[in-house]
Image (cartoon, rainbow, N blue to C red; front, side):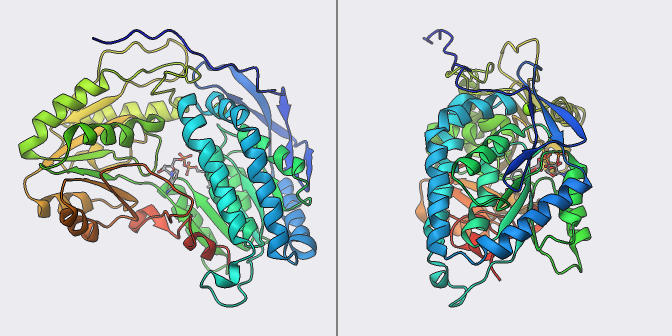
Length: 474
Ligand code: NAP
Ligand code: MG
């Protein structure tokens, strides 16, 4: 028996959307020559008009960040910087409901996730790095580690405020100043964060937010006044950035794509594994760099596992991101939806079997039903390329060695999952998996104290934990 749900929409009233937003430069909101619109991907309604930063705006923001670095933030004792970071963390907590709603309407992610995952992690990240600001000499990078200067940071749209926190919190804790560009489709929470910086009386120029598209990002990472580039996004753009930064003396960290294997051994607790698989690929509509997008099931349990997985998928509620009962929200943009469709169609053409539960998708907005492909071969595009959507590719294996070989058969190396009853097998497999994060009997668990990052084409450098400080220290 299944229960019917009544609608349980979260109110939008808590968000005070302005018709237009400027750039945040040197502690003030300023206008730019051009603007663009950001929409709600669940309804296609325009939310606001946002300034598009040009090359001269990038100049101004970098100059402001340099001034703030030289005169205020760089020389400030760590204990004083910490006070600002703690203040920012508390303001995020105070405004977390508003920020969660704003994130959900600009990005399309379910309120249950923005409220219970994104926002708590954002605040935790600032609290965590606030704690490091006065303890840098004890972080293992020498007795007097120095900041790098001005950091140019570019982030994607899948976890807009969380990626901002991953970038800004460690940079500021170490004494750097920043110019950050959020993604074109999700600029609103970064602008709310700019207000929070003002509310926290952060000295002008320490944080600058430049909204815009890829061109703005390019102008920022190529700016000669930037000492450090931190980028999260696609491997393709990451490569371009690595090329443009090469030989300039700028420090670089890249957090790129992934195609993680989630390995289920025959002794795994299957119902728990099913929850982990669902969380691994349908969390945030699968717009997750470390998503468990390849399920590797041991042959002897594969049929039973798939039956249980399909039964569970049939209970997923797809729809209004602001409904508190929604599990799967909207795809972030028309372009991303087209990419997911194209890759899924290729799966069928190449011979894999496609399945989705019956689910009614809203008429307006960008939607894609949770999908699973069986009969997937390692050569299929859906087994090799990052789909970045709610699409799971299932492969099988017979022996643990085969599982590891298949899991590592990818140009990426960001994350992996292992499901088994045996601790020794977890350790055996984890040692052999070429992935930055390996989860055992769980998936998509994040903690600010734990480093995160990739091998191979998933990038280099670590974010989070003590390791995350290294990217912002000399
Ligand atoms: P993307 O196209 O690479 O964009 C990422 C950011 O870079 C956006 O702000 C984008 O601006 C900007 N950008 C585009 N072209 C640029 C250029 N030439 N120079 C500088 N900046 C430029 O990636 P996406 O499609 O938004 O994000 C999805 C990708 O991010 C996936 O591959 C995913 O795996 C990866 N990701 C990785 C992690 C991680 O931690 N490893 C986390 C999240 C996402 P516009 O958006 O305005 O075009
Ligand atoms: Mg948007």
